[in-house]
Length: 95
Image (cartoon, rainbow, N blue to C red; front, top):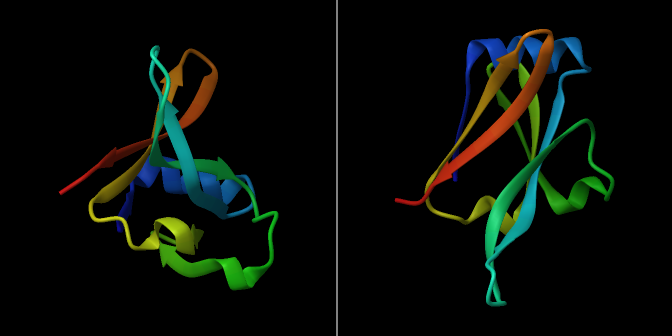
């Protein structure tokens, strides 16, 4: 998996401690079933370091869960702003 971080998102993450975790989440539909899909959270990982591939992207410490490291595609982290509220978002595209 390739990871990109917009400059605005990288600055926001650095101000909040400089760590982000990308892990295996899932998407589900209305009729049941689910699909593995990368998800993200701000902060340090909850599990031990042996579960992650450490990366530094745009000055941010990215902890990439080994379960999603082999996913083909690109994960792009960006910052969404609405008035005074900032939210990080992860857009994943398979290749």
